[in-house]
Image (cartoon, rainbow over all chains, first blue to last red; front, side):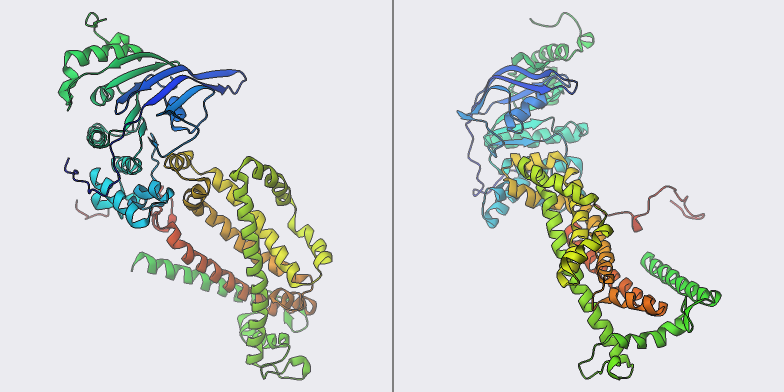
Length: 275
Length: 299
């Protein structure tokens, strides 16, 4: 990636924030009456600068959990805090990259990237400079005056990532952000994300159902099933990781266990799992 | 010829055909409302005698004597009559349009602003919306008489119900993901309305605004039917008393032109606000068929 060299006026202090979830529970009212527990008694501490992937089969509650941390929906029970500050609603400290395209189509790329700063009252020159610097870091320095309709799906994700990073979040939340992208674009965006993460080191909670993606990105993989955390694995594969890293014995072991969690036990060769 | 030229020439041909059809109808329909006043006046009448007769509606002044006071029917008088009556009607219309659009739009936004504003606004607005507007005319007449305010309020009412409904629907169609994204980026409620809701609903709101403009021309003329002393609607009503179909027709033509100008101005004003939208297929025609390449074309 040739996008390094951010100017020093970029507000990009290295982050040191701990995300804590204690006994977090979320009920939904079922349409036919009765309660559904989308998230059941989840406790998780993510140390500063750690990159955590949350995986689980679809419908397991992982997106709900992410929205609780983002503060988009109130949790029914428990506690969520960032460095001791309780989550009571959305905050630019907790940036969220959405699964669907969230980039505002009615703003030019640079206005999108500067939007968070604008909301916080940063002066026009300063916020445009900052936005420009982050756009360059995601490789979009040349399309800042474009409309989103002129961009591809992968470029729109880059805009969203730049926008969230321009806000200098302490915690970065991503909800299957690259799920809709093709394989090559997805791998490129992994590099974009890892570059920014290694530079600013926000604490990351990345929701995905893609085991390989999780293994390429994460320091730690947490597995969720039926609203509960059922596994928590440290991934010590050396960085920078490559596609070959996935063939290392450690990776193969992790992958087999993770696939079993996802209900794909039949696809896994038996006997290799180191329990 | 470019696509645009073809489109313009076609439109012009359609207009000319309509004019010719009117002329044919004027020949085929032999009836008169009163002797000398044809039911379907041909263009030879409309373009000469009729326009001049509009001088009757000039109350005098600016060096042109009113016809009622013994003045001759002059083109100057006719032009002044049209101008002053158009001015009166336009003033009622645009005041009513601005007032009604503002009230309807704000009430529409209030429905989504908070639980309390929704409670306050929603039910009364929904009830008002279903009132048959024309049934309210006699009530407005008794309440406001023939005043400027009466006309304006009547127009405003018709416009506000359209804008209210349009705004509520458009806000309802804004994708949650934009609002949530703005919230996580630190936007306040006011900022979300200003920089997310407003631009997101504008394309959909455009059709409501165009509907409202159309309705405002209808209601302003209707309000003048009640017996206003000036205005284009009043000319139409007076013409009916004497069977002057030609005058009604001329006034209707003017109304048509004004409405067209209003639409064109609005289109132009809104172009910049929709610059971000994906370009439509030419002329907005749904592509259902696929023309095979012309014979001889090589790829």
